[in-house]
Image 1 (cartoon, rainbow, N blue to C red):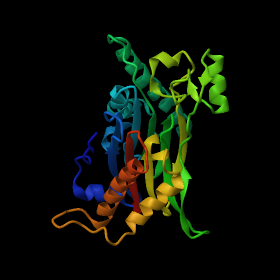
Image 2 (cartoon, one colour):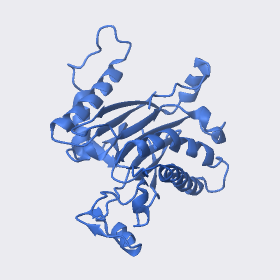
Image 3 (cartoon, helix red, strand yellow):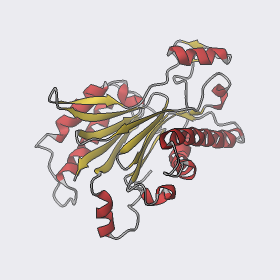
Image 4 (cartoon, rainbow, N blue to C red):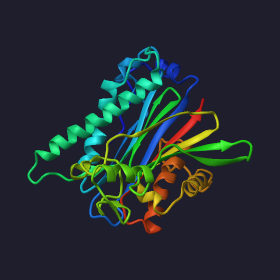
Length: 312
């Protein structure tokens, strides 16, 4: 999905909004790998503050980034890319509620449930019935507070400078939902499903997803893990990617690869480009990481979404 432009405020107002906050900019690269088609989808909204009216005058900046790794087709991932943030816009609480983080989590669960039911209703009305499903990994930023939501095995990580060890490290922001995990397997078995060869009913690799109507009665659920994390002045970038990347890169390896490109003096602004040097290098890092994942043998679709984080 293409980036949405910043809301139509005068430039002076936009500068006021950014004061004191991290400056964010998203970049994405997609590769089909050995798949016949691209079943992933993504969303980059560097500033969607005007759409979240419930936060008016309370939150200076809202941003949203998401990767959806489709399987069985592209329809579930595209549906989520088009509609999940819309559900969040409609359902999230006003900032004045007594326990805002608790209400946020409750409304996030409702948003995921609604988008899943919406897609499954459409899928079941088709002949033949759509069997598409998708993982979800998304980050909603309210000022510099991140709400990380994920289903399945796409991951979000943060690159943070560790001042004690004087190096950048990867910080995990999400939790994989695999059928082999004890709690996931127990739930699946209690609902009559089975885990064979590490997959639900020997077929589905993830234990939570949107879509996958034929597995919902086997214990596959639409309830995401939700985490809250604060951006700090030590944070360099966010990385959200589908499992096509993580099959060939560990989080630490991915962080190291990106940092090497960001520090590569041979990557310069192309003649005639209006991009800054940082934008040029982040774009290059994103594309090189996705291409290298395919070169290293990832046969899956690969989507790499990078978000630069910098303080003014």
